Image (cartoon, rainbow, N blue to C red; front, side):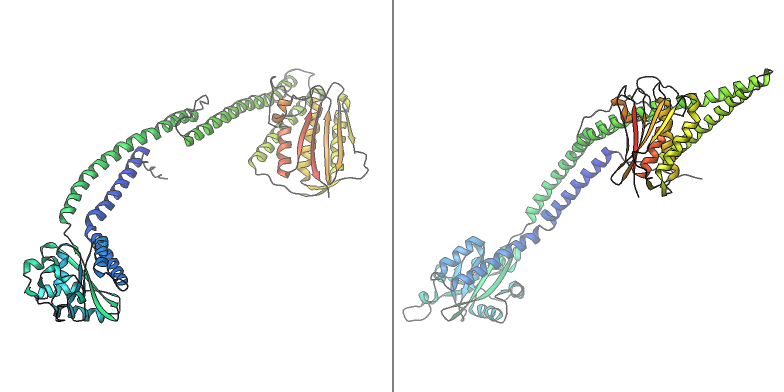
Length: 523
C-alpha cells in the first residue's frame, strides 16, 4: 500500500516572520487607504459635519440673539465656516467669516431670492445648495455682485436704513471669473453651501453657510512619500523583530527537542532545561516526570523479565531433569519423581494463567459478571481447601465468622472474588511466620462485609506498603521466589477489586505480621 509522504512543516521562525510581515502589510495597507486613498473623502465629510453643525447652531442662536453679527462671528470662528443672512427681499442683513467665503454677502437680490425659494420649499431645516451653486457657476450666470463699501454690509437691516428711510445707494458690479473661483470650484477649490430658514421677531430670514474644500493633492503627495519610507522601515524592523523573537522562543524548544530525542533512544538520564518561559518550564517538568516514570518502568520491566525467566526456568529445569533421570537411571521411575514433575507442571500452568489474567486486567478487557452469592461460604471453601492441602506441611488455617452465624450475601463476580480470596490466602501462607498459622476473619460493619487475611510473618516496612500491589515488586532485598505462588497474586487481587470499585488495603507493622482486607456491600 502506497503511503503518502508527510508534509514538510514550516518552522516557528518562518511562521513568526510571516505573521509579523502580514501584520505590517495589513497595517500599512490601512494607513495607505485612510491617509491617501480616502483622505479627500474623510476631509470632505469632516468639513460637511462642521458646516452642518455650525449652520444648525447659528439658526438656533440667532432666534434669541440681540447681536446677530457677534453670534455669527463666534460660530464662524469656532466651526471654520462663513455665514450670510438675507431677508425676504434678498437684502443682506449680516455676514461673518474671513477669506473668500465672504463672497456669500455679495449675492444679487435675484440670486438670493432664488436660493431662498429653494430653502423654503424643502422640509429639512437645512438644504444642500452646493449643486445649485455649481450649476449656476457652470452656466456663467451673474449671481454675484460686489458691493461697495463691504464694511457697510454687515449691520442689520434696521441700521442700514437711510435718513429718508430708504436703502443706501450701493455701487454694484458683476464679479469676474477670477473672483468667483472660490465659490465655483475653479482652480481645484470647491465650496459646500447649505441654507436654512431663521425666524426672528415674526420675520423670516435665509441663512447661508459655506465651507471651502481646498485641494489635498500636495498633502497626499507628502503623505505618500512619508508612507514609502515608513513602509520600508517597518518591513525591516518586522524582519529583525521576527528573527530576535524566534531565536528567543525556539532556543529552549531546540534544547527540549534534543533531550527528547535522547529519551526516545531510551536514554532516561537526559536533562531537560527549565528555562525560557512558563510553558517551556511546564513542558520540561512534564518531560522530566515522563523520563523518571519511563526509567522506573524500564527497571520494573527488566526485573519482570528476570523474575518471569526465573519462575519459568525453575519448573522447566526440574521437569527436564527428573524426566531425564527417570529415562536414564533404572529404578528412578518412582511415584515421588512423577509427583515432582506433576507439581512443577501445575506450577508452570499457574504462572502462565496468572500472567494472562493480570495482563487482561491491566488491559481492561475483562468484564464483570455479577450475581448474588454467599460470601461466607465462598471464603469457607477456600480456607478448607488450602487447609486440607497444607495440613501435612504443618500449616494451620482458621476461619473466624466474626461471632455471627448468619452468612453474608453480596452481589459481585463470584469467580473473581474467589480468585481474590485464594490469592490473599496463598500470599499469607507464603509469608506467615514459623508457627505456620493463617487466620481468615469475617467482620460486618453497617452494610459492608469485610474479609481480613492475617499472617504472623515479619510484616512490611511502611515505605513499602504503597508498592506491594505491583507485580514482582521487591524492596531493598533481592527477589525471593515464594514457596507457593507466582509473585503475581497481589497484582491480580488489586485488578479484580478495582474492577469492582470496592475498598481494599493492607495493615502491617514490622515484626507483627500483615493483615490484607477488602469489603463488599451486603445484600
